[in-house]
Length: 178
Image 1 (tube, rainbow, N blue to C red):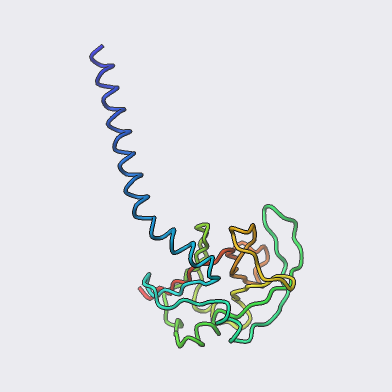
Image 2: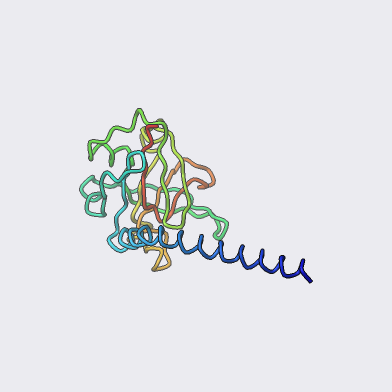
């Protein structure tokens, strides 16, 4: 009987500690959720340098950089491969337009609203016609995650055979120098 009481105490203590941990993590993430919601609603993404916010980029900023159309085969675990006409701006041109030099970065990480992460090397980013931040598919502005789409922005690497490193719902581009 004594062992059962001790086991029950241990279970209750463990559950209590887990509840406290979840509460603390939820409180820490609350601000992050607000930022994610604002980025999606405002059709913006954030460029960070070593994890610190540097600049917010919106659809109007991309339109000023003369976006271009290109085709790529979109393939996912949920859809059959199909050719899509994307419209976007090369990430290297976005960075250049903002006077951000990432050529000496250790790596560049693009993160989506859903937590998906795509790591890139500076060589990949600075290779012409290799890495695009897109906002339109087949002539239509991308719908947001909340609207059931892949946007408002999607990182597309048109030369990737299986589109594994594409990042839908792109919210941050983190340039890591360390």
